[in-house]
Amino acid sequence: MSKLPLRKILGGTAATAMVFSLAACSSEDSGGNDLITYEIDCTQFEEFGDLSGTTVTVYSSIASESEAQPHVDSFAPFEECTGVDVEWEGNRDFEAQMPIRAAAGNAPDIAYFPQPGLMGSIVRDYNDQVVPVGPTAEANIDQYYSEAFKAYGTVDGTLYGVPVGANVKSFVWYSPSMFAEAGYEIPTTWDELMTITEDIAANAEGVEKPWCAGIESGGATGWPATDWVEDMMLRTATPEQYDQWVTNELAFNDPVVIEAIDKAGSILKNPDYVNGGLGNVATIATAPFTDAGLPILDGQCWMHRQASFYQANWGEGVTVAEDGDVWAFYLPADSVDEHPVLGAGEFATAFRDAPEVHAFQAYLTSPDWSNIKGQTTPNGGWLSANTELDPANLTKPIDQLSYEILADPATVFRFDGSDLMPSAVGAGTFWTEMTSWIANDKSTQDVADAIQDSWPSE
Image 1 (tube, rainbow, N blue to C red):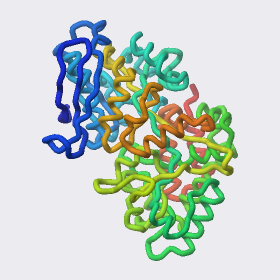
Image 2 (cartoon, rainbow, N blue to C red; image 1 turned 45 degrees about the vertical axis):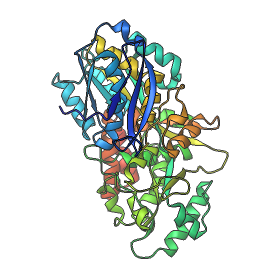
Image 3 (tube, rainbow, N blue to C red; image 1 turned 30 degrees about the horizontal axis):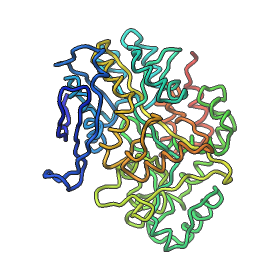
């Protein structure tokens, strides 16, 4: 297991409070980086005893160094306070590999689950290996997180997962300059969005199209298509129907769900609308989701529906801002009075009952970590549901916009549906059937029937 290098300059003493400096990518210090300084109270870890020389392994789907490094950097104060060595391992095939590791008795100390449904399946299948959240971390969650986020980490009445991130998914990325030159205003309703789409399609030249999309993601191929369906469910069904859908109280092949899938298909399966700069409709299935929005930079695509975390994929030299090279607007509903928002997050679950593991979960649930993590994420793409997060510590405008959306009283927030479903569906047939829906032009009804048939009986 390899450990990413820490970009840190440590300071302070063995006093109760330690002052740390971490480097964020810029050009102010001798290493070409800005220095971020903050204070953390090390006494919060004294209850766990002497942890010097111990190790905590963390396993995650976050595999690229650009995304993983901010997590590793954010652990530095905990390591310095406690003497614990935190080792990070990322794997794009996490969803497929984590059950295999659990079955082999080779689970990590901590696993970052991007799907509460998968976490629930692992907890139920390997309950003798999974460790409930300790009292200190649970007290932090009760104090600093909403009841909803605690519920997402709870399986059969026991808290197993601590929140380690959140995001907003209901965004459409675009080029502000392209919109301005064409005279387009940011759409505030679905009809306005489709009017822009139709106008772009009517005037497109060459490979240019209104939309670009990609759902390839290794062993998790298909998940971006499920996000489309979930966003459409929030725009064609009621919040209550959405909640019933994720528990199968509302069947997957119910006409309500069929309508939502078809609404997604009104864009994704329309050859006049996709796939700008990438090819025909079928190329959506093979285009890596990490690259699928990039044709916007070449003027070959106008819009790309993807979450706030997509900002990390635009590359160096690209300005992500309202007046920059790319920006994002809220994916509108039928009326301006409706404000449904799809979001998600990650939950850290323990597989070893040890003081250093419980101490690490306590750190992850503290305001200290959320604010430090914000500061050590120079490329943005991360948000915390911790109520003590200072939005000023979020380094990118899109993350601050996401925070505003989540904090807006008018927002009707729902967690990613596939992430809440049993893993056999949410991280299984929902992904594969939506891939067939695109790649093989499988009908909506056949896709919905196949997913419904796969729903676990218990």
